Length: 359
Image (cartoon, rainbow, N blue to C red):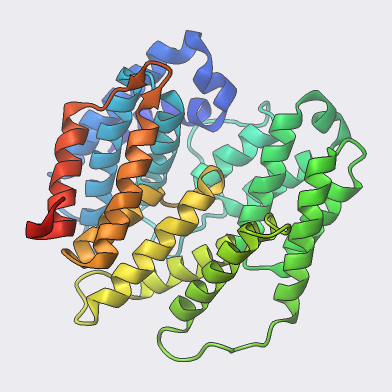
């Protein structure tokens, strides 16, 4: 485990800072550390499962599979796809590294790295990758309020603003904190017209959220039913002039789905169709919010959806979305460059989704 932690610490600062990750001088170090982490993750799957961690098997498998995809993406020059995949994999590493069963947020972790010299965006990404969400929100929000940072790095500032909103809505589920972020965006003298317009739209959606009737959805599937309603509303919003208000709705749906899935793990004796629907909706929300998503990649949800309800129309929809996403991830200026192992994986998933009716 100490070797795994060492490889993790080598990657954390580079994955957290997109500029550092994209810098050619860091390419060799990133490739080496990712391959090392992948090789170690394969060994982790063979270790005895900790008695106190029933999720170990699933986490170890996802870590191994996702890092394999990251290594392939790096070899094929798909660095954005690789960075997102490695960042997600680090989330799995943190869960195992800390051996903490008390929830998905850690107040403070000492991983041998000081992010204080990084930009507000990179600091926030680092804390978010290690699931220190209070620290992440503080780092992002300090950047959102900083007009000098907005003037110097508008792209980084906008990403910090969007990411702080994601944490306040999805993890904190707090209209009050989300509203304070939109106010900070609007009041920053360097805020661009497009960001002010987006913040106004987010603010209106948050106001409606604050006024919503409590316990409108009841029963065991209340969160699943609400998430389905929120995503339907978000789809309608995307077709209107208030398109950006859909961001808040997708984030709220994502929070509901994450909690519903946590409370209804695979293997329970219950309706598999409900779990498959939750995974499909979670994939939809994650894909719409892929740049803000610190928890699980949308492709993972689609794959689990196929496993939960094979040879169904829902599985077929999940496969189509998964296939489109993977092909887009491996398409660059020179066209499609799909590794053989990815092609084999997709073929197996396609057969599982369609059965004997595979097109």
